[in-house]
Length: 156
Image 1 (tube, rainbow, N blue to C red):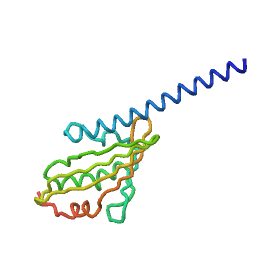
Image 2 (cartoon, rainbow, N blue to C red; image 1 turned 90 degrees about the vertical axis):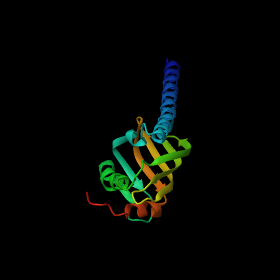
Image 3 (cartoon, rainbow, N blue to C red; image 1 turned 180 degrees about the vertical axis):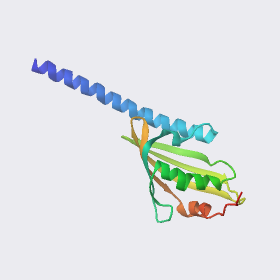
Image 4 (cartoon, rainbow, N blue to C red; image 1 turned 90 degrees about the horizontal axis):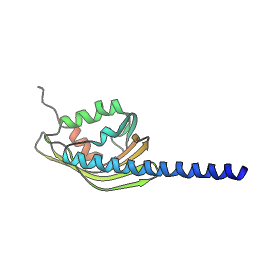
């Protein structure tokens, strides 16, 4: 009886491990699909963020810091997008996965409202939980990003 219980427990653990592996593989595919959709203008990786996501912009710049999703959208995303004349278009190179961590290496570009072109390289580190992104660490050229944020907006 003890042996049978042990085998059943091992069998359940194995099945559970398979489900966890399948979920993380699905997470990687979800990220790849979101980036493909973003490049085509039909989706966004931001749709995968949990309401409680913490987003950290790494680096030595005024834009660096850790933000809640609401503050990120208000203080970073919205003001950045207001300075774009065309949508930011990504070109992703690789998506790597290590456990619940998914790393996306990509470049993105857009035309700015001042007629200049914005180009940047990014590495985003997504921590996944239950199919959603719970934490992000973003690495990018903050000098290029901060130059965009310094563009004066016209009063409308």
